[in-house]
Image 1 (tube, rainbow, N blue to C red):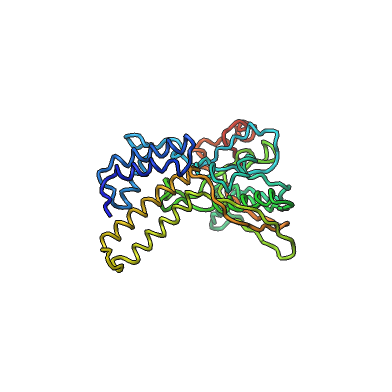
Image 2 (cartoon, rainbow, N blue to C red):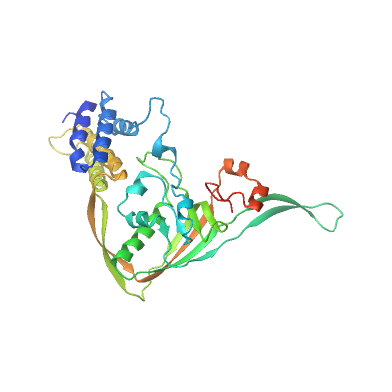
Length: 337
């Protein structure tokens, strides 16, 4: 089996556009992928395919554009100013926007807590004591302020299969935003996404940038469970299958009669490349969905979520206490608390 030209894989990817979806987005992405691969005279290794994939839509200078700029939230609170329900936004990243599992949250405008949650907030200032000889009281030097963590306890009641799908999406979302980008992700090495917390009006939570520190949900044994049909990414399944083939080829090496070790290495490289291609297309929502069978959701449960406010160095430098006290940050793209 020979695999010596990037044009061969480019042709296969372009031809596979119909398999991954007939939508114009699917075709355009496949064409871009094919063009990227065709620039390589040899992509006989998985590393070569990975490099080709990572070059898709990148300008000559390699500067980041579009989704690659940031994976923070796309939620804009002003359009939902009259909706005071507590919600967490979806990250502005293709896989989150196109995920068939997260579709109920996208339709709702984020993860909206369907029942009024219990929220615990705190603010504090840290001081360090400076002992002075022969004094009755120490001098306390200000160190820094701390907005503290935000603790949310949210009841979740499920009455039908539609609400069960929302429960599945909420759990999947909270698990997802607690994980970093890794492996063949275009943003591999980056920490978990930052999302926005909104609720109860502008002077309580308005576009507060947060990261999830912990999520806990107990599946009780004293209630009924409702079934629902779940779906996943078809392209993601292809990526998983290709990875399995690649791993099997690496494990077997040259132990199959009639197939040399070098041929098995080529099979592993091709399978790895196909896995990367399929995984990339799946992250863009290309390739449709596949059935995931049944899932069973408790009719009553509770989420315990701990959030950490996340402010950048730039936002810290620009902070003004005078503006904060007078309410001048109401129209800020993110909220100080």
